[in-house]
Amino acid sequence: MFRVRVSRIESIQDVDGNLGKRIELIEERPIPRFVVRPQTEEAKVVQDMLQALQQQLPMFPARGQFTVPKIILFLTEQEYESLGIDFDVNQIYEVALENQTIKFKKSV
Image 1: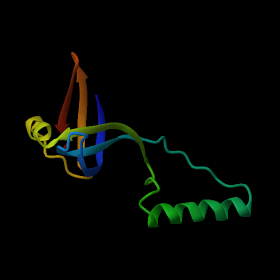
Image 2: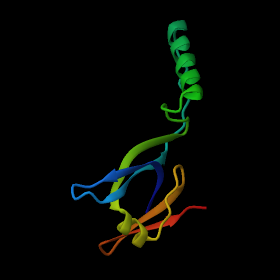
Image 3: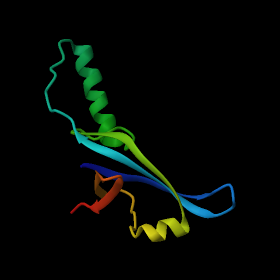
Image 4: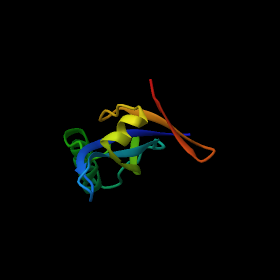
């Protein structure tokens, strides 16, 4: 079992003209925490700048979390409805791969 977060949901149209959704799920894993003390003043300045960027810009991963693209679903509207899951951006799901099936469970 692993955990994924809904990163992006986009409207798409397949080659037959059917409307659907592209759902991007990224894996969440904790990063081992260790403190690196810079040896030089220049290294300390670089470390401080990177920490400031991580706080200000959402494209940089937050400290303690690392995201890896895991699953991208391309579903028609009918397939999305029959799946029975209302995906929301930033919602976290637990994913289990069992007996040739993929099961999603909303994480609380």
